[in-house]
Image (cartoon, rainbow, N blue to C red; front, side):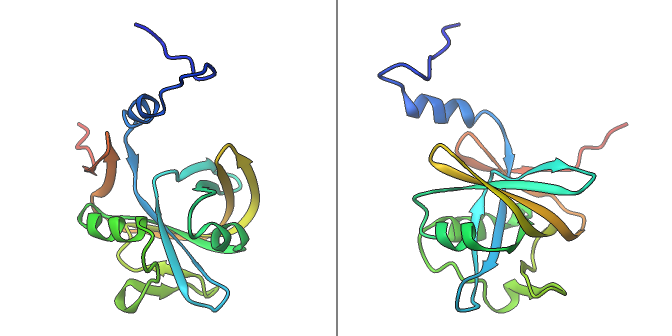
Length: 170
């Protein structure tokens, strides 16, 4: 096996992305209000749990994103785990198009934070820390509320949507 060196000239970023794509991830919408109070969202697959006690999560955003300022300046946000049936929703909010949650997609928690109504789980967070990391900013959130329901999750693997089903462990 020939291991690619990431610190040499001629680094193959496409091969690197392909290697990263071997790790299946979940797909989420992160939502927050913009400066005018409109609920905006972005699709991410960088969501991860950091700590159970206290409950802390993280996600990251590309510094070139059209929604970068919104999310790096927001104090409150939600992370919404998408169900397997929501690939179209994921694609919509991944593109640099209208990113407003509207109508029956939108609810607000008791703190007024926008959440996606179709989510399998929702985590409402207060931003606790931001850390620049290469071409992204990692956003850490203290979880101040959450909920979940049954269902299969939308996943992403090798550049394609997949379904993450609950395994029947026996």
